[in-house]
Amino acid sequence: MKRIGTDIESALKTWLSGVERVVIVGVGNPLRMDDHAGVEVVKALKKKLKNSRVRLFECESVPEDFIEPITGFKPTHILLVDAALLGEKPGFLKLMNPKEIEMIPISTHTLPLNILSEYLVEVTGAKVALLAIQPKETGFGEGLTEELSEAVERTASMLAEVLENLLTGLKWTARG
Image (cartoon, rainbow, N blue to C red; front, side, top):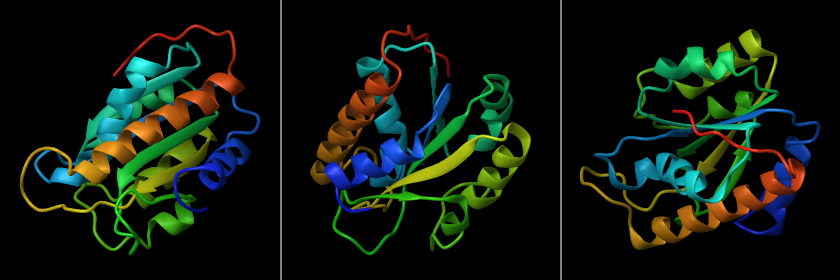
């Protein structure tokens, strides 16, 4: 799975095969600059994607607080979107399965995403993955760097297109 473009699109399409209902969880700390990229992707998706089979959650650094509404939707797929130190250029995307998530070196979240992922798989039976975005700057401060702002917009557009193509003709209601 490579940079934004056909490789990541292809990986997402493969992972989303058989999708009926999908939850997208934006994770990240708003006071750690690019760490907030996952939440910003969800915010951008809310403007681009209108489908009742999709629920979008801006969880910031406490995704565990959203377990009940996530599981209550009975998703077939749960996509966590978060910044992760991948050792790549800012904006690089990687689709990771729950086993790979535990290898992420730093987390600004109360509950590590690998534990959350395992729990969500167990409770919902859904396919769970992390769409990791390489940040440029995660020091204290607000707002995304230019590189990550552009990556967030491209990522949201790509996700909206992929999901609309897979879930054509269905209405969407925002929640979260």
